[in-house]
Amino acid sequence: MGDLVYEIDDRLYVNLTNRCVNDCTFCLRRHGPGVEGASLWLEGEPPASEYIERIPSPGRYREIVFCGYGEPLLRPGPLAEIAAHVKGRSDTPVRVDTNGQARLFLKRDVLPELVGLVDAFSISLNAQDGDTYERLCRPAFKARAYPAVVEFAREAVRLFPRVILTVVRLPGVDVEACRAIASEMGAEFRVREYIDKDSDTITQGSRETEESS
Ligand code: SF4
Image (cartoon, rainbow, N blue to C red; front, side, top):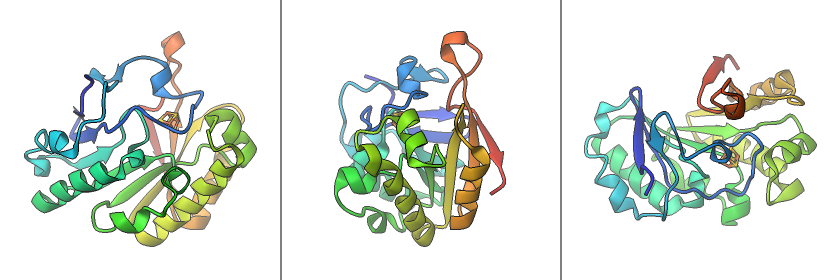
């Protein structure tokens, strides 16, 4: 069983699932079982109670981040339950890292259900247009995916205090065009540096360069 929660510096990361509706060319899951010493590949999907018992003192962290190996909003029920536990015992901000396609895979708008439980969303924009997104992220929802990501981000900006759009710096990604999309919708913007595990020159996705929106 992989680690359900793991610490990096002063943040606690919550690993809900291996599943995802994308198959990104740069995904960490393509390169090994974990990150920063944590083993992330889960053999099942434990109930929220198993996560909650591992987070007895959420107030000791700077931030609680739902990310994991897969897409955390594929398990919105446990995510909300764990976030409510954090909010009930601390002022620690809760962030969800997501591919932004929840409306497609859940077939409902989940964001209103998370108001008051989640403080920030980090949404993987990853591309300046749908064609580039499909090439890099290979979404199961094909051409419907990118417009859904953009729409999800707009709705998140409307409902939540903090939204960050992210891209991975890769050939074909127009970082400045992506920055403009973030700026236009009022979101922050971050560029993740790609690290090629195969050549040992990067650690893709795990190192972030914060840039102004
Ligand atoms: S959206 Fe994230 S978890 Fe899903 S395949 Fe892409 S990088 Fe991996």
